[in-house]
Image 1: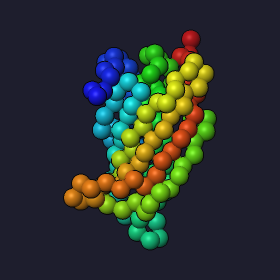
Image 2 (image 1 turned 45 degrees about the vertical axis):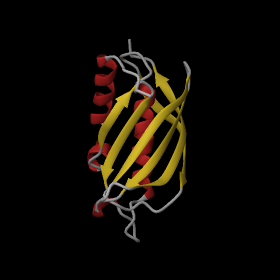
Image 3 (image 1 turned 135 degrees about the vertical axis):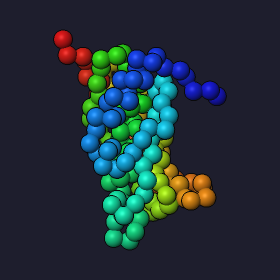
Length: 147
């Protein structure tokens, strides 16, 4: 199934929101793809984000999963809107090791007051093989444009 196209202004709004986040700069994260109700974000796994056993820290998986969910939600809104995470939970499924983390998020249901989202975080090995390391489920609140 081909991804749903989004308005260029909406895509620009998502990229602007993403690029203004210091955490994403710290993680050297980038948007891999954006379409209506979907977003994929990747970040390299390096020494700065590993925990004591050498795996990517769960906080890195949470951060890119949360932001991917927010960007997916934002892609369903009109230009000028913003988003805030109201609730987000994570299920850690496997140690995250490899060359990078990839969060693939999608909107489950977009309402006027709440947007329910899901992200699956994968750890990608040097050979391209992926391991499912986390799943996030969250609620995003649309913020109306300021007058």
